[in-house]
Length: 199
Image (cartoon, rainbow, N blue to C red; front, side, top):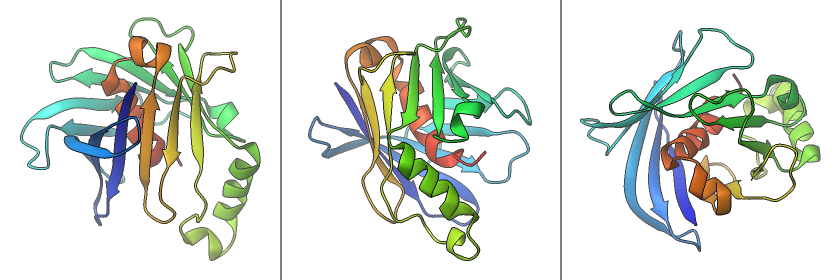
């Protein structure tokens, strides 16, 4: 099993995330990446560096289009080679946030789907977001995602919010998800599911 802890760092002008290795119990290990994404960018792009000095790019995430409801994002290694493709499932996300994972060069069908676990909580989150004044406050309940094969029910990974007010997550991958998907694509999706959730 692969596991990662993703923690947002509060800053005024950019989304920043620390990525840590984790063990099976979810205990934090060494820092393995630091993500920096400028807010209000015309075209979504963010880099994940080896550490907080931001000297060496580990991998990057790049949107293919400026505006796209069913956005696709390429996950690129340090040499610019695509190691995974992420896609927001626009229609499915109207009720429950849903993301697709694709293999490079094989985008006719996702190999895995990450879907918000609780439909009831997903609807409540949407109502919360449109309420006057209340919608400006942080959502106070933890919400989680499960990874499955398209049309399947077996869970091969999870993405769980671990704190109430801070954006801290535990990402776990096992079985086929662990063996078939590049870990950089999984971490990129974990960051995107927070940073790009409302896009």
